[in-house]
Length: 366
Figure 1: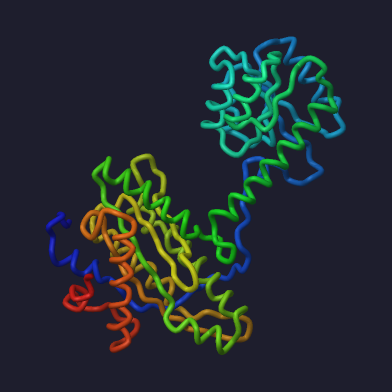
Figure 2: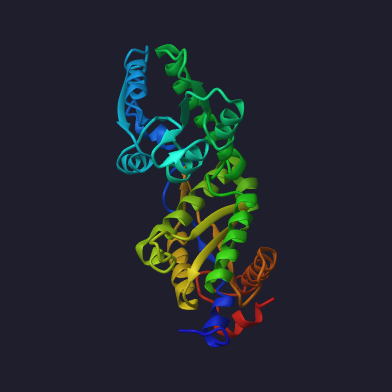
């Protein structure tokens, strides 16, 4: 174990910058964003799964008739309470939810907020008897995709509203993905990474925990682009990204970065060009980070095959710890960046696969 004033292990970690080799698995495509509704259907021909949340028997009967007589086949499930809806969604996926605003355990537009907080990625269509525009706007602002009045409701209107709601949510998810994730690798982009680090720092301060920020840079990557073309370079970047994700999913890695609720706390990002970064939360001690860096070393050191070519790209890594090396994202990234460049200097003069000795690592501190 290492306390905040520890010496040897922290010194080793601070410079745990090593030149390592590249990716192993090959999946070229960028992962597509998904929502709960997009995962629910086996094919476009299968019935839409719709959950109706309505406590009034007559209104529930009306909604059931509308949904069963529309042009699009639908499988309908009915519950009368919000908590029952949350339980139903925990056990299966729905393409859409039809919500009434007069439930026993949730009333008015606030019901949309409560449902959104509990059920992510499913479009909500509100069907209400209240014609008040303020109520309708309140529901929409809280995340409803549409607000329909019970008076005059028919199968075509409700069916069309549900289909439009599903498509709007999918389109919105795609736009969110473009805004927050790197198009080439599918990893978080720089703005999203900085946002997650900021939130992670807030949690670390509140819970008095530690986190680590790793900065990775591919050495001599320009040579691959210049000698073999940008398509080959892009493929190498994709493979590196997949291997980073794979290393973070390894059981011995996840075990040291899982919070008390069992959730994994890590984010991998492409900051631009050939630069990557990793955020590790809930770090117990430097040994935990050493374990993860060694896993990255083992994962990234093998050659990369792109078509008929084989590349052995090397990577330098710099590490910074909160609170030891800084209390802001900018400071931690700068510290890790400096350590990474010291790693390049060290490994260029030694075995590129060897870990630097602790005295050299100590000198790498910014």
